[in-house]
Image 1: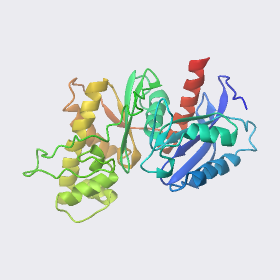
Image 2: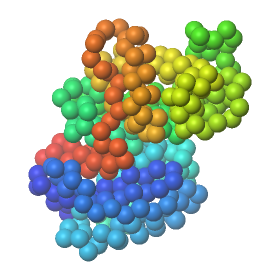
Image 3: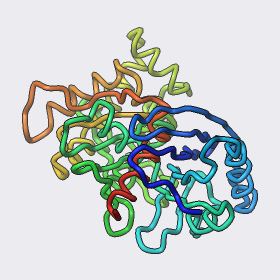
Image 4: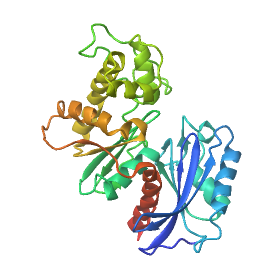
Length: 318
């Protein structure tokens, strides 16, 4: 069924994470979210996953535009040529051409992008990055993700991994405030010493333990830092130094003038103010303006970014 390609359109958007699928109708160009539905994410069986998406889509069958295209932001990478998915959080989709499979099943156009790219795109268009030509979106949630936007376009790169600063052996084993080296922690990607091993919520908890402190949740560590507990203060101080170094490198390499942040840690204004100070002390171009700023769209960023991807796609082909 042909999609509506007028400037004003309704897009069915989904934000697919390792735990939940959130789907909504998004009005363009206003980006207003109209109706939402949420389902648990099946992670072990591809057919069950497809059926769950179809069930969620069926919820909107009574809307005035049931033929609306489906745009999906998903936790994982999408190969630019083959369009197959690689997702650590949803392993049943590894090697699946999800766009084709869903388009055939639902009889509607389907577009897919990485969830960090969706976050970055939304924040660059209508969020805190509006007006900036180059935006590097940094997600600091359960793990680490990133997306690069230049002149309003998602930059995927040759393998669909542009902006992916969470993986690669770039950990600083010897923070300046520590008198001993830290171990290079193993990462789920198969490498060691990735930013993901200490930068996200689970990584912060691993870092806390590696420093010899009793196990604690990321929430408790951040709260303890805010109440000046010595163990949590040490962990957060070292965390900010270690995360700021690869994030500074990403800014220097891309030339981004703003870094919107998302995810649980990335939404904490006090923690991001600390990270901003650490980054500003390290970037090649010194500035008095904030560089690292929590995004303003919160949990809607993925849905809005997915809808904007669809608009970008059809405008490019008009």
